[in-house]
View 1 (cartoon, helix red, strand yellow):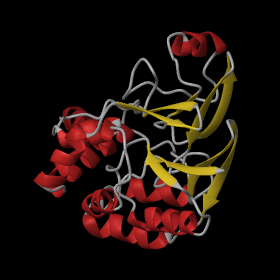
View 2 (tube, one colour):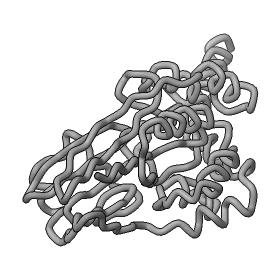
View 3 (cartoon, helix red, strand yellow):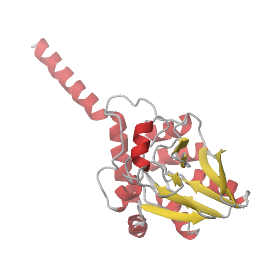
Length: 267
């Protein structure tokens, strides 16, 4: 029997990655694969990339890997307008400045998709979707109609993707779509890390979602000390995103106009 672990969306969270790899090490796993987003949001982009490189974990490119590798202004994420967008922009800028040239080259070298075959089962690895490798969110709420379109030309039996940070299993046309959730930035309301184990025995497969606790406090403190937005630490502590409110620039402009109006009224 083969045991394959899939990890995703590590997002520069060294404590979470180490905890997950330690847990995997206790389970006699045969292989580990990563479906993208090694960097972003967290305080340890270089350390995370170095571990992936040293352990030679096959990895497909995530949208954040693409953004940092090519030093883009945006990761293409679906942020809410206001402070959340500002936090995303600040995260991109900080990570670009603090990721080495060598590690950016590694991120740029990652493939957009990867197909592996185990005991006759073909498995497609992609960060987003089979038709939009980097950016499409395939969620538990994605409609059956959309899933049919996504799988229309897929030859593989199993699709493992990331991007949403939500554990998921969907079944359609005899195919299975699995999402390991997120190692470094869970969004289901439970602080910690998640990953996926796929068991394959003579062509028969089943799967298990695994939750792992890690030292969230240390990662939170690192985020603050690094000068990253404190909202990123709050997301880790909550295990989910939250309403970050209006952007600082918007608030500053409103305050400026308010003072101006007050001055005009006094005159």
